[in-house]
Image (tube, rainbow, N blue to C red; front, top):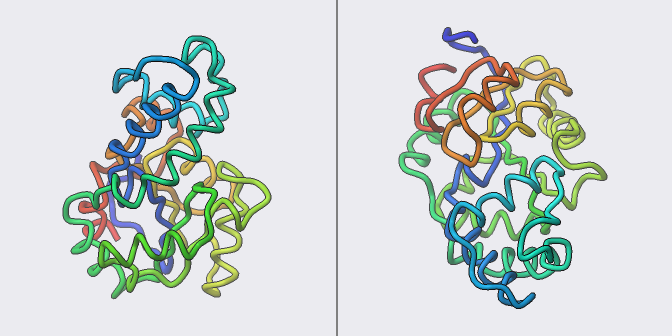
Length: 217
């Protein structure tokens, strides 16, 4: 892993676990979904296992008393209904984005299956929408991360070369998408994945969170 500064003209940032803390939304969505299939509210560890598995395309069949597949529809409906009130901006994100926006073009690449206007509204609520030139959501692509499709759309929109860009996020899918696209990759320890899981993907950098990013760009 490289610890020297990385030159970049564009940085594509994940949303959940990277810019915002979505723990509250994950927990509330799991509570609602488990209740809908007749199960008691899950512990935090179980609630966080749901988005971890979804991120990696892993089965949920053993969760919610074996009702994981049926629970999933309730989970997505609940999650998207509570993100507006249950997500929180991670510390020092605004300052980091302000510093980065002077040097690079920034975009948000999220797997949330919602219109980009919903994401832009959330970014605006947190006062950070002004820093982003483009937003790509799960509705804008045929294949979500780890497919490179969203990143390709970003470079086309921002008129950049992929080799001059960085994909930065908290998940293994973010790193795999960046590598598949031919971008540089940075992993953050601010989300759901453990350091050893991220290190296994061999990103160019592993940082504690977004606030540490400006000193490496």
